[in-house]
Image (cartoon, rainbow, N blue to C red; front, side, top):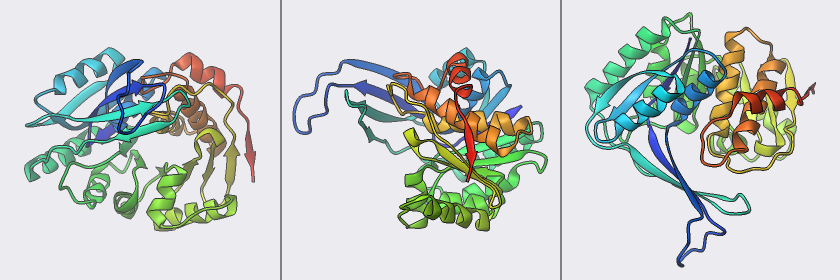
Amino acid sequence: MILTVCMSPSVDVTIELDSLNIGKVNVVKNKTLSFSGKALNVAIGVARLGVEAQTTGFMYNENGVMFERALDKEGVRFSFVWNGGRVRENYKCIDKKSMLTEINDVGEQVGSDKLVELMQMVRSFSSRSDVTVISGGLPRGVDASYYRELFRAVDPGSLRIADTEGAKLFAALDAGIDLVKPNLEELEETLGKEFRDKDDMLAGCRELLDRGAKTVLLSFGKDGAVITNGTKNYYCKSINVAVNSTVGAGDGMVAAAAVKMREGADLPDILRAGVAAGTATVTTFGTISFTKNKYEEIYNSLSVTEF
Protein backbone atom coordinates (compact mmCIF):
# COMPACT_ATOMS: atom_id res chain seq x y z
CA MET A 1 0.00 0.00 0.00
CA ILE A 2 1.08 3.59 -0.67
CA LEU A 3 0.02 6.31 1.77
CA THR A 4 -0.30 9.95 0.73
CA VAL A 5 -0.78 12.86 3.13
CA CYS A 6 -2.60 16.00 1.93
CA MET A 7 -2.50 18.99 4.26
CA SER A 8 -3.93 21.54 1.84
CA PRO A 9 -6.70 20.19 -0.44
CA SER A 10 -8.16 22.46 -3.10
CA VAL A 11 -11.03 22.77 -5.54
CA ASP A 12 -9.18 23.44 -8.80
CA VAL A 13 -11.23 25.36 -11.35
CA THR A 14 -9.48 24.92 -14.71
CA ILE A 15 -10.58 27.47 -17.32
CA GLU A 16 -9.71 27.28 -21.02
CA LEU A 17 -9.53 30.58 -22.93
CA ASP A 18 -8.32 31.74 -26.33
CA SER A 19 -6.20 34.27 -24.46
CA LEU A 20 -6.15 35.87 -21.02
CA ASN A 21 -6.65 39.62 -21.42
CA ILE A 22 -5.95 41.54 -18.22
CA GLY A 23 -8.44 44.32 -17.53
CA LYS A 24 -10.87 43.10 -20.21
CA VAL A 25 -13.80 40.70 -20.45
CA ASN A 26 -12.66 37.09 -21.06
CA VAL A 27 -14.95 34.42 -22.53
CA VAL A 28 -14.55 30.88 -21.19
CA LYS A 29 -14.33 28.11 -23.82
CA ASN A 30 -14.29 25.22 -21.37
CA LYS A 31 -14.31 24.79 -17.58
CA THR A 32 -13.78 21.80 -15.32
CA LEU A 33 -13.67 21.33 -11.55
CA SER A 34 -11.21 18.96 -9.89
CA PHE A 35 -11.30 18.05 -6.21
CA SER A 36 -7.61 17.77 -5.61
CA GLY A 37 -4.51 18.62 -3.66
CA LYS A 38 -1.03 17.37 -4.54
CA ALA A 39 -1.11 14.28 -2.33
CA LEU A 40 -4.67 13.44 -3.41
CA ASN A 41 -3.54 13.62 -7.04
CA VAL A 42 -0.67 11.26 -6.20
CA ALA A 43 -3.08 8.78 -4.61
CA ILE A 44 -5.26 8.80 -7.73
CA GLY A 45 -2.21 8.20 -9.93
CA VAL A 46 -1.15 5.30 -7.73
CA ALA A 47 -4.63 3.76 -7.95
CA ARG A 48 -4.69 4.13 -11.74
CA LEU A 49 -1.45 2.14 -11.87
CA GLY A 50 -3.21 -0.67 -10.05
CA VAL A 51 -1.63 -0.25 -6.61
CA GLU A 52 -3.62 0.14 -3.38
CA ALA A 53 -3.70 3.77 -2.28
CA GLN A 54 -4.66 5.26 1.09
CA THR A 55 -4.85 8.99 1.67
CA THR A 56 -5.23 11.12 4.76
CA GLY A 57 -4.84 14.78 5.67
CA PHE A 58 -7.02 17.75 6.53
CA MET A 59 -10.54 18.12 5.14
CA TYR A 60 -13.31 20.70 5.65
CA ASN A 61 -16.98 20.30 6.52
CA GLU A 62 -18.70 22.54 3.96
CA ASN A 63 -17.50 20.92 0.73
CA GLY A 64 -15.31 17.98 1.77
CA VAL A 65 -17.89 15.37 0.80
CA MET A 66 -17.16 16.13 -2.88
CA PHE A 67 -13.57 15.01 -2.33
CA GLU A 68 -14.75 11.77 -0.78
CA ARG A 69 -16.96 11.09 -3.80
CA ALA A 70 -14.11 11.80 -6.24
CA LEU A 71 -11.69 9.54 -4.35
CA ASP A 72 -14.26 6.79 -3.98
CA LYS A 73 -14.82 6.85 -7.73
CA GLU A 74 -11.07 6.33 -8.25
CA GLY A 75 -10.87 3.47 -5.76
CA VAL A 76 -8.74 5.42 -3.27
CA ARG A 77 -9.27 4.72 0.43
CA PHE A 78 -9.46 7.82 2.64
CA SER A 79 -9.66 8.86 6.28
CA PHE A 80 -9.42 12.58 7.00
CA VAL A 81 -9.02 14.92 9.95
CA TRP A 82 -12.13 17.10 9.67
CA ASN A 83 -12.26 20.87 10.28
CA GLY A 84 -14.79 23.68 10.06
CA GLY A 85 -14.98 25.91 6.98
CA ARG A 86 -14.46 25.29 3.26
CA VAL A 87 -11.73 23.81 1.11
CA ARG A 88 -9.90 26.60 -0.74
CA GLU A 89 -10.52 27.24 -4.44
CA ASN A 90 -7.73 27.71 -6.99
CA TYR A 91 -8.19 29.06 -10.51
CA LYS A 92 -6.03 27.83 -13.39
CA CYS A 93 -6.41 29.70 -16.69
CA ILE A 94 -4.99 28.05 -19.81
CA ASP A 95 -4.83 29.85 -23.17
CA LYS A 96 -4.51 28.37 -26.66
CA LYS A 97 -0.71 28.57 -26.39
CA SER A 98 -0.87 26.33 -23.27
CA MET A 99 0.22 29.26 -21.11
CA LEU A 100 -0.93 28.61 -17.54
CA THR A 101 -1.91 31.44 -15.16
CA GLU A 102 -2.75 30.39 -11.59
CA ILE A 103 -4.64 32.19 -8.83
CA ASN A 104 -4.34 30.28 -5.56
CA ASP A 105 -6.67 30.76 -2.61
CA VAL A 106 -5.56 30.77 1.04
CA GLY A 107 -6.72 27.80 3.10
CA GLU A 108 -8.49 27.69 6.45
CA GLN A 109 -6.68 27.51 9.77
CA VAL A 110 -6.61 24.28 11.79
CA GLY A 111 -6.34 23.85 15.56
CA SER A 112 -3.34 22.37 17.38
CA ASP A 113 -5.43 19.35 18.35
CA LYS A 114 -6.01 18.63 14.66
CA LEU A 115 -2.26 18.75 14.00
CA VAL A 116 -1.74 16.11 16.69
CA GLU A 117 -4.59 14.01 15.29
CA LEU A 118 -3.05 13.96 11.82
CA MET A 119 0.32 12.89 13.20
CA GLN A 120 -1.40 9.98 14.92
CA MET A 121 -3.08 8.99 11.65
CA VAL A 122 0.23 9.14 9.78
CA ARG A 123 1.87 6.99 12.43
CA SER A 124 -0.89 4.39 12.18
CA PHE A 125 -1.35 4.25 8.38
CA SER A 126 2.37 4.35 7.57
CA SER A 127 2.95 1.24 9.67
CA ARG A 128 0.93 -0.61 7.00
CA SER A 129 2.37 1.23 3.99
CA ASP A 130 5.38 0.44 1.81
CA VAL A 131 5.74 4.11 0.81
CA THR A 132 4.54 7.35 2.42
CA VAL A 133 4.23 10.51 0.30
CA ILE A 134 3.80 13.92 1.95
CA SER A 135 3.41 16.78 -0.50
CA GLY A 136 2.08 20.27 -1.03
CA GLY A 137 1.49 23.25 1.20
CA LEU A 138 0.35 23.69 4.78
CA PRO A 139 -2.79 25.19 6.29
CA ARG A 140 -2.66 28.88 7.08
CA GLY A 141 -0.61 29.59 10.20
CA VAL A 142 1.10 26.18 10.43
CA ASP A 143 4.88 26.44 10.69
CA ALA A 144 7.11 24.71 8.15
CA SER A 145 8.58 22.61 10.96
CA TYR A 146 5.37 20.55 10.91
CA TYR A 147 6.81 18.79 7.85
CA ARG A 148 9.67 17.53 10.04
CA GLU A 149 7.28 16.32 12.72
CA LEU A 150 5.09 14.47 10.21
CA PHE A 151 7.99 12.67 8.58
CA ARG A 152 9.36 11.70 11.98
CA ALA A 153 5.95 10.14 12.68
CA VAL A 154 6.28 7.90 9.60
CA ASP A 155 6.99 4.26 10.42
CA PRO A 156 10.69 3.34 9.84
CA GLY A 157 9.62 0.51 7.55
CA SER A 158 7.96 2.87 5.07
CA LEU A 159 9.92 4.66 2.33
CA ARG A 160 9.51 8.45 2.48
CA ILE A 161 8.86 10.81 -0.43
CA ALA A 162 8.60 14.61 -0.08
CA ASP A 163 7.30 16.99 -2.74
CA THR A 164 7.36 20.54 -1.43
CA GLU A 165 9.68 23.53 -1.46
CA GLY A 166 11.47 26.16 0.61
CA ALA A 167 11.47 25.92 4.39
CA LYS A 168 9.02 23.01 4.26
CA LEU A 169 11.46 20.97 2.17
CA PHE A 170 14.37 21.78 4.50
CA ALA A 171 12.25 20.72 7.49
CA ALA A 172 11.38 17.43 5.78
CA LEU A 173 15.03 16.75 4.96
CA ASP A 174 15.90 17.07 8.65
CA ALA A 175 13.88 13.88 9.19
CA GLY A 176 15.65 11.97 6.39
CA ILE A 177 13.91 11.40 3.05
CA ASP A 178 14.27 8.59 0.52
CA LEU A 179 13.25 10.73 -2.46
CA VAL A 180 12.47 14.39 -3.07
CA LYS A 181 10.96 15.68 -6.32
CA PRO A 182 11.40 19.40 -6.93
CA ASN A 183 11.00 20.95 -10.34
CA LEU A 184 13.69 23.32 -11.58
CA GLU A 185 11.91 26.50 -10.48
CA GLU A 186 11.26 25.10 -6.99
CA LEU A 187 14.89 24.05 -6.61
CA GLU A 188 16.13 27.50 -7.65
CA GLU A 189 13.73 29.25 -5.27
CA THR A 190 14.51 26.88 -2.40
CA LEU A 191 18.27 27.28 -2.72
CA GLY A 192 18.21 30.93 -3.86
CA LYS A 193 20.31 30.15 -6.93
CA GLU A 194 19.96 30.15 -10.71
CA PHE A 195 21.02 27.02 -12.57
CA ARG A 196 22.37 27.50 -16.10
CA ASP A 197 23.40 23.96 -17.06
CA LYS A 198 23.34 20.35 -15.90
CA ASP A 199 26.42 20.78 -13.74
CA ASP A 200 24.71 23.60 -11.83
CA MET A 201 21.57 21.50 -11.46
CA LEU A 202 23.50 18.51 -10.14
CA ALA A 203 25.26 20.78 -7.65
CA GLY A 204 21.83 21.92 -6.46
CA CYS A 205 20.68 18.32 -6.15
CA ARG A 206 23.79 17.51 -4.09
CA GLU A 207 22.83 20.23 -1.63
CA LEU A 208 19.56 18.40 -1.01
CA LEU A 209 21.43 15.11 -0.71
CA ASP A 210 23.80 16.67 1.82
CA ARG A 211 20.80 17.87 3.83
CA GLY A 212 19.23 14.43 4.17
CA ALA A 213 17.78 13.18 0.87
CA LYS A 214 18.88 9.79 -0.44
CA THR A 215 17.67 10.48 -3.99
CA VAL A 216 16.62 13.59 -5.92
CA LEU A 217 14.25 13.46 -8.89
CA LEU A 218 14.47 16.86 -10.61
CA SER A 219 11.96 17.64 -13.35
CA PHE A 220 12.40 20.10 -16.23
CA GLY A 221 8.87 19.97 -17.64
CA LYS A 222 8.84 19.21 -21.38
CA ASP A 223 12.63 18.67 -21.31
CA GLY A 224 12.35 15.61 -19.09
CA ALA A 225 14.05 14.98 -15.76
CA VAL A 226 17.18 13.75 -14.01
CA ILE A 227 17.61 11.48 -11.02
CA THR A 228 20.67 11.26 -8.80
CA ASN A 229 21.80 9.67 -5.56
CA GLY A 230 25.10 11.57 -5.55
CA THR A 231 26.97 8.66 -7.13
CA LYS A 232 24.92 7.84 -10.21
CA ASN A 233 23.22 10.45 -12.42
CA TYR A 234 20.62 9.65 -15.10
CA TYR A 235 18.68 11.74 -17.61
CA CYS A 236 15.43 10.96 -19.42
CA LYS A 237 14.14 13.22 -22.19
CA SER A 238 10.40 13.40 -22.61
CA ILE A 239 8.70 12.83 -25.96
CA ASN A 240 6.83 15.51 -27.86
CA VAL A 241 3.12 15.45 -27.09
CA ALA A 242 0.22 17.86 -27.44
CA VAL A 243 0.14 19.73 -24.14
CA ASN A 244 -3.41 20.32 -22.98
CA SER A 245 -2.63 21.14 -19.35
CA THR A 246 0.40 20.97 -17.06
CA VAL A 247 -1.85 20.67 -13.99
CA GLY A 248 -0.94 17.61 -11.92
CA ALA A 249 2.09 16.60 -14.02
CA GLY A 250 4.47 16.67 -11.05
CA ASP A 251 2.00 14.66 -8.97
CA GLY A 252 1.85 12.06 -11.72
CA MET A 253 5.64 11.80 -11.60
CA VAL A 254 5.55 11.23 -7.85
CA ALA A 255 2.83 8.57 -8.16
CA ALA A 256 4.77 6.54 -10.72
CA ALA A 257 8.05 6.97 -8.80
CA ALA A 258 6.37 5.77 -5.60
CA VAL A 259 5.02 2.66 -7.34
CA LYS A 260 8.45 1.83 -8.75
CA MET A 261 10.16 2.40 -5.39
CA ARG A 262 7.63 0.06 -3.80
CA GLU A 263 8.70 -2.56 -6.36
CA GLY A 264 12.38 -2.04 -5.52
CA ALA A 265 13.19 -0.64 -8.99
CA ASP A 266 16.56 0.91 -9.80
CA LEU A 267 17.12 4.62 -10.45
CA PRO A 268 16.76 4.51 -14.27
CA ASP A 269 13.40 2.76 -14.03
CA ILE A 270 12.11 5.16 -11.36
CA LEU A 271 13.12 8.08 -13.61
CA ARG A 272 11.60 6.56 -16.74
CA ALA A 273 8.31 5.87 -14.97
CA GLY A 274 8.18 9.38 -13.53
CA VAL A 275 8.74 11.06 -16.89
CA ALA A 276 6.17 8.78 -18.54
CA ALA A 277 3.49 9.61 -15.96
CA GLY A 278 4.22 13.33 -16.02
CA THR A 279 4.07 13.40 -19.81
CA ALA A 280 0.87 11.34 -19.90
CA THR A 281 -0.77 13.79 -17.48
CA VAL A 282 -0.18 16.86 -19.66
CA THR A 283 -2.00 15.30 -22.61
CA THR A 284 -5.35 15.68 -20.85
CA PHE A 285 -7.30 18.89 -20.23
CA GLY A 286 -8.97 19.51 -16.91
CA THR A 287 -7.90 16.27 -15.22
CA ILE A 288 -5.26 15.84 -12.55
CA SER A 289 -3.94 12.41 -13.49
CA PHE A 290 -3.13 10.12 -16.39
CA THR A 291 -4.63 6.98 -17.89
CA LYS A 292 -2.70 3.74 -17.48
CA ASN A 293 -2.81 3.06 -21.23
CA LYS A 294 -1.27 6.45 -22.07
CA TYR A 295 1.34 5.98 -19.34
CA GLU A 296 2.39 2.59 -20.70
CA GLU A 297 2.48 3.86 -24.29
CA ILE A 298 4.86 6.69 -23.34
CA TYR A 299 6.88 4.55 -20.90
CA ASN A 300 7.72 2.10 -23.69
CA SER A 301 8.98 4.91 -25.93
CA LEU A 302 11.41 6.49 -23.45
CA SER A 303 15.10 5.84 -22.92
CA VAL A 304 17.41 6.75 -20.05
CA THR A 305 21.07 7.77 -20.31
CA GLU A 306 23.74 8.00 -17.64
CA PHE A 307 25.84 11.15 -17.51
